[in-house]
Length: 440
Image (cartoon, rainbow, N blue to C red; front, side, top):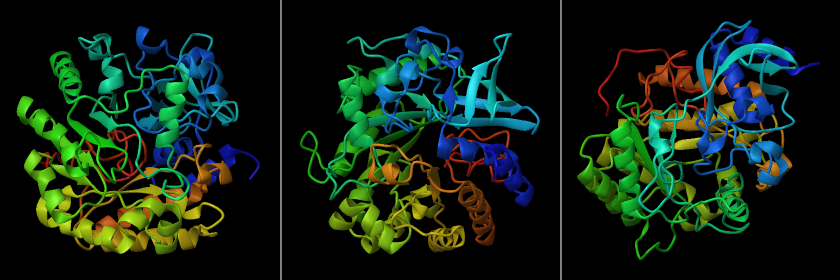
């Protein structure tokens, strides 16, 4: 097709039951968006909440390649509304790509809009600077550095270990830039704490709790790189778990506690539960056996695909199936040179994985793949996966949930177009709105 607009509108027409908001959101997530200088933030000294780089870069260029956007950060997220497609409120995580056909810019009256192929297609809202970001810890560190919030303030993202012990070409996941993101921030002289002190985390949470008077922050996620040995003398379950224990002792019941870690043995998973974690994310990354072995060599070497899946099922016996929510990276199924070459094949494979887990009552979620250029798959696939794959995945995901009578997973806010706040994929935007349910 001659333009990105034609592609987007063709998919909206072909898949009318997929919210049109999700079509645009997935395109922004897979391909990124450019920012005029008029749409950049003034970092932590301004009125707009800036991008925190909370774990990965989620950019289509390195910091030196982003120009002014590397000095004046773009917003953490944007909200799309209105325009010729009549978009309902849609929260989108910002992934910067100076070459994108999408651009955020202010008009002559200073009102921000999203432009596609030069045409304004929606109004753009940016997150206001939260009051808790205006306060620092006693050691001078910023709350944004220690405990940034995403999903329009819903989730506190605690990346307490900012590197991964799967290291080098023979161990790193081939789509993941966690280690490079650490290096580029350190090279740029930005504060980027490698291992966050538990007392710093608690102090940052105290500031958030004090100034988040609307109680917009509802959950926290503890996460970071895989630990194959120890960090600060602790194995993976104890390292991540001791933060949860401290948080739950200091703030009992204030937030939904979630942990993203490897698929660990049953006894380790029980430790997470004992420490007060409520939701466990043992991410399986990609379903296909061959692609898992190629794209996740460290995980294959240390655990193995079959054992990984067994541990996910075992963890449901400890947390309850509804509270085990493994993530996969949507789009790497089609990454050259080893991925599927047709959308039909990729969707069939991914749906097989969805059916496997959902048949056990486990509801996976997914992050839309951003092809970061410092990763092997990002270098080989700068355009990412076809937009049609992402739209058909939304269709398959909802259909599979319906087949097994499942509802949206807990800890993600409300589902439904115009309501969802989960910003790194459209799976929550594409599910039906429902009556509020218990938090876990």
